[in-house]
Length: 153
Image (cartoon, rainbow, N blue to C red; front, side, top):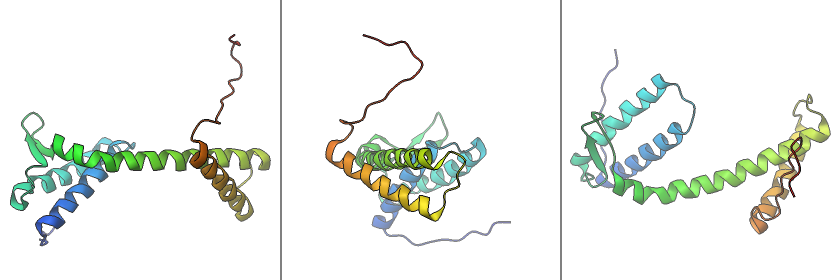
């Protein structure tokens, strides 16, 4: 049986907690969590959102009759989407450079090769090269070569 605890938060701390809940939900909704785990997260988020009135944060939260729970409203989304956009932008470049570097290193090492310390160092050096390229030129120098299809003129 779970015991109940309480924590004391200022209005500012509660609003920061709402930011964390919103961002956490955003990331988890983009993952492949099974439905039971999503519900567990949703239930905790719903509880935290339900306290908004007690902390003067009702401008960020609304109750949804249709779904029977609390969630971030449009204003909160508009206030926090710049954080999401910045995260997405940084993650895109980081993941892209990592995967390209991994491809390059493993192509020369062989696909069955384990990632040794030496290969890992090569991987991070190659990733840094991609990071620098993307910082200077974005995707301007990226070209894809499709194999097996008909050539277009």
